[in-house]
Amino acid sequence: MFGDMMNMMGKLKETQRKVEETKKRLDNVLIDENSHDSKVKVTLTANRKIKAIEIDETLLEDKEELEDYLILTLNKAIERATQVNETELAAVAKEGMPNIPGMDMFK
Image (cartoon, rainbow, N blue to C red; front, side):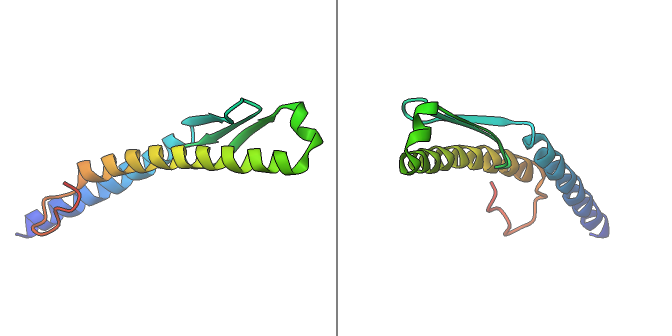
């Protein structure tokens, strides 16, 4: 029994290490999102850090329109980045979960 507990602890530590590695890797996964007419383009990492914003010059004349474009495009990009992030981290966590009775919520 003690050996099983040590094995589980080892698996949990290994999983924790893999999760941290995955988080670092996701800093290099870029998500590009464009507005419907490509007047605004944003690039984020899968960890939801903004890397770049490109704005068509025609939007610089209308502050409210530019704000609307930014809000819509950033929200779409954040949603996509969150999906990638959660999928990647869930896969690592599921892979490393020890078989603990009653704890099969990740399977």
